[in-house]
Length: 240
Image (cartoon, rainbow, N blue to C red; front, side):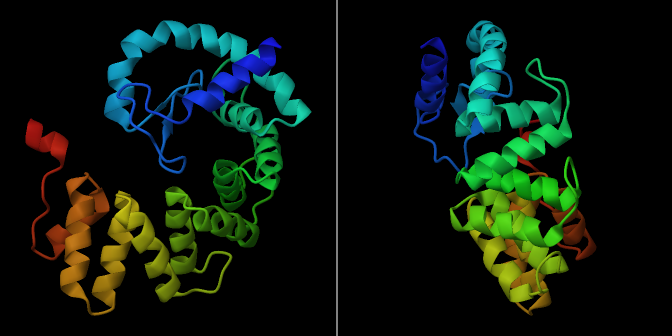
């Protein structure tokens, strides 16, 4: 009963930011890397909440290690993702085990977990804990991207841009980068800007490069500087 209760708390708290209470889409949430039981809108909310959360977090890590290991082996999807994450990072009381991480991500992905589909794609693309397979990685990126996972859209855009596991297609890369760029992902904004410029849409490309540069993206800043357009300072630099 205690194990079921612990996992239910994780699912319940995954709907709203632990700091400000705003509802967060599953595809854009940030999760506490320790207890994995609280999610946030952004890094600022997570930082502000740490003082009040750290005591609960440390206690939760110990409890969740035991609970999650048990239910992950029993097939609980949320726990498989939790154990896979910490096994990949060597955190949360787990020893680093890339093979175990990839195996659990695959099980969770097969069960339809969107985040695990993306993470499995990353494992396959890099060969971390599993044999490298760009074609299968692209398939998992596509599955997660279609479900709205912003990071998967960036990875799929890169796959099409460089022909990694899929036929090279600037048009397909543009389509996926644009979807992620609208969500505010600097990498997507950067690649979208470059591709638009290469397609003769210089003004649109520059606008996206400026958006990425404003977030501190070094590649976008360099591209703007090389074009003698100047890169806008990031928000942190403006505060200084």
